[in-house]
Length: 361
Image 1 (cartoon, one colour):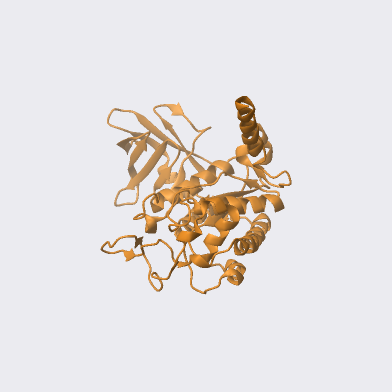
Image 2 (cartoon, rainbow, N blue to C red; image 1 turned 120 degrees about the horizontal axis):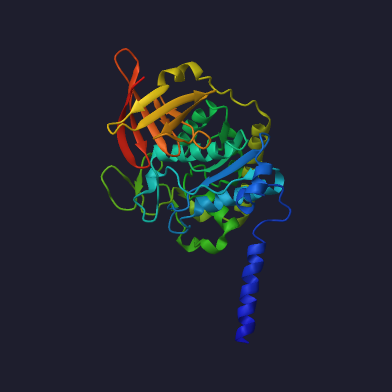
């Protein structure tokens, strides 16, 4: 009997794993395929969808810390059923500073959050795709995505993302709000989780909390100078949530996501900025105190580097992230100009080490 039960549990676990993806899916999840299959699919015509949802951020006493993650995953499943896109793994860390007084909540700083998205997109774009869409389950993430989109547009890459205050999404959610006021871990989010993972929801702890109405900034479960006291972590009418509202609301929201993805697949791509003339001032050989050389060269619209005579041009090139500042997977460089505007030296970070180099030619 014990052996039978063990076999049954293994079979159930195997069956559950085998049913993770819906066989009716039109989309392909990158995490499910090999690199050789990815090589076939990551073409210039492909649209890559990247779900973005916090894996650990407070959502009141009744919802799990992974509420945003669960919603990002749920919307990705809806998209997968309806569109032939590539779906990247969920990005579960981002810029969520307002919730850090609630234990378990995580955030990365603005620059890191922006760079994370930029580097993920750049990595995938290097194989062919130029069109990317982020399912954005967040509000504070929006400015980081705006900055990422601007950076990538200069490189000829289109990045678009959902945002809750865009009219189409406001209209999609409106019929399922009992009260006009809402914001976080509220009626809609609670309904979404009841639809997706009712086993993770404890509605006996859901309360209606409007203590943040008319306020902005960070919230805190205990009184802290400069913070807004919110003992529940809820901003809205969570107790009004139902599974049916979640089912219908998510379907309406997903419909708008798909409409935007369709527009991404057909709209004109941004034109990459021609930086050939601008980059000429950086080209040359730079030397550190030990005599080790950093050689900066240009090919097309890109800068490449050789450090200590090691040629990595077939693997890494330098991306411009700010005026006179460039980064790659190994090297970060801030070029410094003299009073005449000429580049004379550079501050570098290479695999954790920081040093100055002086331009010799």
